[in-house]
Image (cartoon, rainbow, N blue to C red; front, side, top):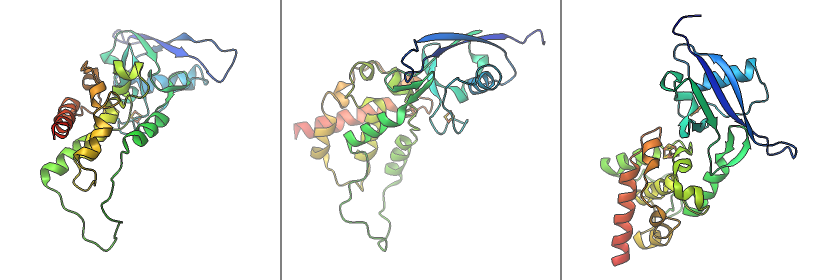
Length: 243
Ligand code: SF4
Ligand code: FES
């Protein structure tokens, strides 16, 4: 073994909620670190070489699909883009909180995001029925850039897991939900005006539920401008409220 090679201790949360006899706990696995090793590689090796029953999610392995979010030493991160070299020798992996546990490190983010999208009606509300023969609607470069920024969200759930309010209050739209509201508020094709948005955004499940801890901004792996998003929502809703 190379003198510089570390032997990592990977402590992983284990629990199968489908098994009535199961009790939550952790298991430790020892693995030799290799150059450019990611947590995705660690977990795959553990599953292939030591414990085939280990549950965790992945798909793209390149920080695009949003499947592999988990708590890494207490911080929400993507396993596929986290190098073990950036972590201490003892690594603790837990599933993201807030989301329903499927088993071990696997959580159901899909159900949470589907409910959130329905809550904020996160889709284009058209002014007229779609006409395939009509010309494409135009928007300014600034508008399209702002929408593009918000649309970069990969729905990994890291921001939601880091949010104190989302952890305590099930109805709260969370950082990803607020981002989704802003994405459609900014879209000139959406028929909803400021007053229509006011009811959705300006309550404790919307932007006024945020208490400004801003962990979401720190943990977002895509570095979305969440602070700017919240400032935009507050400006728009306050203006609509005064009107
Ligand atoms: Fe993940 Fe960032 Fe989207 Fe939150 S805003 S779900 S952290 S990509
Ligand atoms: Fe797709 Fe990590 S596997 S984001």
